[in-house]
Image (cartoon, rainbow, N blue to C red):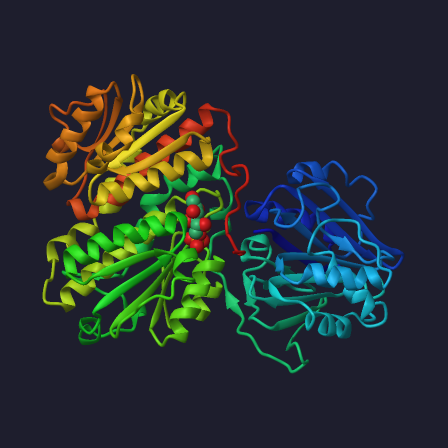
Length: 604
Ligand code: F6R
């Protein structure tokens, strides 16, 4: 939700660095964007509704040589996407500029107070209270002191950057829940919502923690708490290959990220099996401790929740340990009943989803061990959880999650296998077979012309139903989300046996139904459900294990070469991703930046 960047340098001008950073953060929000540069003559601001390209068209007369500035790409929460509501926001005299990510919960009360004191507001945003508060607390003379005083008045989860034309060689940053990292250059330093903003320039970075304030100049980064006591943060080397965060010849990040799955699956599995055994030392649990786990509680949102559903089936099937999977936004307010021996697993690509983080906090407060399955090194969930298992998918830029989802599935599969072994139910066949999954994925991706042709036809649909049983139902849920979010076609997923309990009434001549069949033991039942929908006129598109494809009563068949059914989801998921991708392309939609969405949901 919203991307913020800051740059302070000597040799390089800030503007190109800010624009490059914003381009890389645009996935976090893209309804408007803006930049502010500090010059001794005042703050120069440009902002525009729409994508970054709209902002670029307004930059003509900016003082391009200014070496210090801040920028923002927005996902609207308070106030519609307009030029006025775009960040940066200024105080009454145009001396102080701020960009902000998150929500100031008490902004209405603060706004009224500031209005009563004579401040003039130019937007409907919650953010604008910050520069006015800073002005009120004397930022004209001392920005750092004003930030400290103003921050005490703010309630909510946020990160913000402040810039003053009176001290034009520094940016002051505050982190309170929303992510913020510092990039360390030579004679220049960066601030950003995530590493990808500056990865092309430096791989050395620090992650700010909640309650940190950073004063960043070209040659120094001073971190304190909000009382002013010095804090020290580790300097990390971010080993993401910057090319992974670029499109590399593909028309969209989403296609690139789909296509690189076999490779990142290899990275994800690397060193995590040894012969017939799963080895995930990051879990920090000896087999006897794993054996002590009586129940698993997964919390996640969206696609990560769907990965959790696959994890549930596998853990229950292989390890015979009960698993509950909850949508994080529900779990956090559900007064959950957890029992001794429960392991809480938070699944989150970004590691920044506000609801998922709240669940981790809740579980910790209740005294349960928390484990994070995440993709982003140094993300908040990694610091809030007792243990972290990384998915190693590399940066995922497209808003629609693909490689992060399938690597989450692989990590949960490894976990299921480790737990199964600890419970005396080892599956050496699956441990050996999981190493073949990247090859099966590569094989599938070698010929996708058939999937592309089908997607073009599906793209003409108004509604699509997805159905399956067991793992295939969990996959169906992800399939329908993927197509909805990027092609805007209405889609629903059903447990195949559930259709006739009501939804069958919606099937009419030509209604598209995508049936997923990778589970041999359940295939016969799903075939009956295919016959039921066909009898009502549905056109059935089957994504099916090649071994089950013979005589299938479907209109269109995508046969898959799969490993054992427990290892099929990652490979089968790629077909659903490609169907969604090409359906969206064929409808001319903005695949990487679908309307109304943002990559990481750092607000409730
Ligand atoms: C859909 C998608 C979202 C995310 C969800 C959770 O393609 O990407 O549904 O899965 O917002 O995000 P993370 O995994 O970052 O917690």
